[in-house]
Every structure is written in structure tokens, then in C-alpha cells.
Image 1: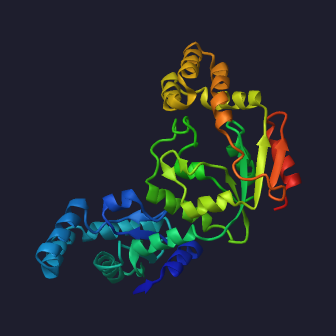
Image 2: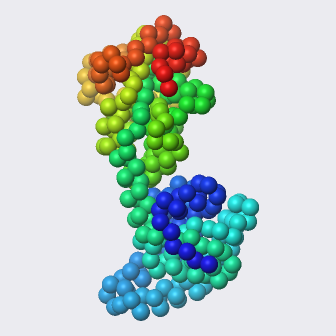
Image 3: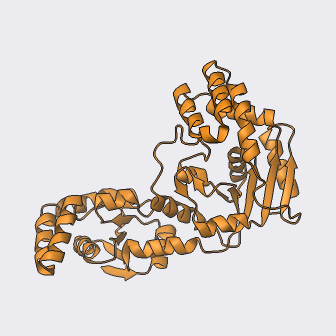
Length: 346
């Protein structure tokens, strides 16, 4: 059986019935961006897709179909075996979700093959393109946001992790972007996802929570590494329902940064410092690098915090109705979380 369904039903079935999503686009399309947790079982490889597309445009549909059948005929068994292997991870379900780019010939062809083999196939109407419309529209919604802010080294990420462990709804933008946000944020994080995949992952996280529930975010710049927070969501963050400002002494923040980044190689740290050389200025850059090379990491961090603290602006507001200032004498994160929750109603 093959049934075409809309994007809302498609994602609802994935979520509620725990069904696998089969993405039949080419590997290069999938690797650029895809629905989170989807599996790539391609109909055409990258070169084959290019060839079929060229024939379709230059010769005609029938000739393109014949060339496509030529490619696929030798791989039909492998396609079915791949889907069988995936289904084993879902209690050998005979129900699968499927899509191509526009919901056209590729998904129709593989859906027919899988249906003939015994699967119930639910094909996404409009394909991945329709999913992208869904993703972009999700950022236009008005979310209830509590924004955690504070100067560099305040430990905001760890505090949000503790809040998440306590059951609060946390959207970890830095984890999704694979970047910690600062000039040092790329270290040990690997390659960032594409902008499109970052948006897909972020939309997926947002969809896990009721629109009326409070979502906790860390205050970020528009760019996290090379990935941009969608503008509508970024504006929503700027207009947060509550802004929790952590007022932590510079010395404590310097120790936190040393403990976080001090384990990394001198070469990576040097490269990170050089990224902000224009902002540090020649003299402060020279001092920072000399301190780093001499093993005085704490002093190096203090020297750079001059730049970071000078550049910092309390991101949002002095509106007393929205701003909650938490004065912290140290970085006992459990105590800080308790202080936040004592001051903020969720």
C-alpha cells in the first residue's frame, strides 16, 4: 500500500509511531541537509541523478525514465535489503515513511517497489521541499523564552544543562551548531552542520515542546561560529519573557575558562587568540600570546577578558519586569541554579 500524506501527518507518524524515514534523494543532497533521523537509501547516486536530469531537460521525460530504469534495475535488491536492515531497528515494522525532493518520481518509484515487497509506504506530499517550508515557518512562531545571559566565562551552558537535568525545557543552540560561540568555540567540536541542517535540527528541537511552555535559551550572538540563528527566532530571543543575568566576578570566570579550554593544544589556543587580534589590539594581543607561550593560562585569560568584558552589553533590557539579576560570589552551579529558580517562576 502506498499513501501520500501531508507534512503534519508525516511528522506525527514518525513521532507517535516511531517509524523510520527513508530519504531516497542522492547522497550529496542528503549530506547537505536532511530530516533529523532520516536514513538515506538513494534511488540514484550523485552522478546518475545528474545524468538523468540532463537527459530529462535536453531530450525528454521518456528517455530520462529509461535511463533511470537502467541505473535502478541493478540496485533494486540492495534497496530492499537496506530498508529491511533499517526496519529491524524498528521492531521489523512494515510501515515506513518516505520522501524525495518534491514528492515526485523518485519517491513514487521506490514506494512502488517497497509496496510490492510488502511494506506500507507513506510518502510525503511535496517531499523535502515541503519539509523545509515547515522548518522555516516554525521559526515564525512566538515562543515563551527565558534567556540566560552573562559575561564570558559565566558557565551558562553548564547551568542550562543542570536545568535540563531537572526537567526544564532547554534549547541548546551551541550543541546543535557544534560550536561554543566564542573565538575558542570551534575547538574539539568537529565540523559544523550546514546552515540548512542547523535549521532542521533546531526546528526538530523546538517541535518537542508545547508552544505554551517556557523554553530556556542561552544568550547568543546572531552567529554561532558560521551558523546563523534564524532571524525571527533571534528577535524572539531579544524579546524574551524573562532575562536572567548572572553577575559573576571576573576572577571566577577566568578560572572557569582555564578549566574549560586549558586542556587543549597551545596551537589551537593561539589560533583562536589570533582570530580576535583586531579587537584585542596589538599590545594586548602580544601580551596574551606571551602569557600563553609561557604557560600562564590564567593570566592570559584575564588579559583577554578585558576585551570581552568591554565588548559585553547586557543584551536585552533594564526592564525590571523582565530582568532578573543573580549576584554570584562563586561558581557553585547548583547554588546558582537554586538562586535562579527561587527568583523565577516557570
